[in-house]
Length: 283
Image (tube, rainbow, N blue to C red):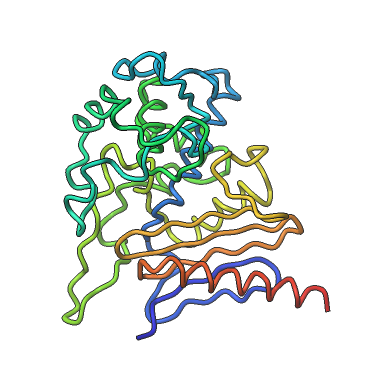
């Protein structure tokens, strides 16, 4: 069955929506949230508020001494923390439903039991970005939304709340079942928010990505971004949505969102279109 899809891109890429998708309704960004979190870290460091090499134990009371983990480790997925909070698999239909602030603090106190790998070894970690977001809000005394507004959205010329964890319900676009009922979404509020809980319209998400990776309004992109030769890219998926964005050093860029959590298919669609735009530009 065709999946509602939205494509936005630079030169050589045709913008389009299919099957009821919408450029201007809020959609889940999933792990694309992490590029906002990583950018907040970089901007706070630039402002002298903190240092990415600060030991985590100096910023969060619950973290025991001797972990060797810094904010930079969290941003680069080299903290030794596992991909998910240990109890996440208890609810496969909503893996973060029980991941509360109290649960996060308990994991921090038991750091040496929670960590599953050595510091410095790369292992993609949603839990790590939850901890990073907690460190940023704890250190500044600000909410995650306040940090996103001040250090990312406003400097990019975007409205406060244009990227948010709580869009108006009547402006959200979510997949629906056979009877037209909205499908149940994962709980991505609370401590997991900095890892995957933001929403934006596709137009806004594209503006965010272009500002960070093509125009580089805020300087060198955050360490969050994956690098593949001359391209920067990132992606994300939830139970109901998947998204991919990439920018080539020659200025080509793309943003794709689909109302299905099949990340592999979304990645493939986006990379094919980005490569095709490059081939067309060389003719």
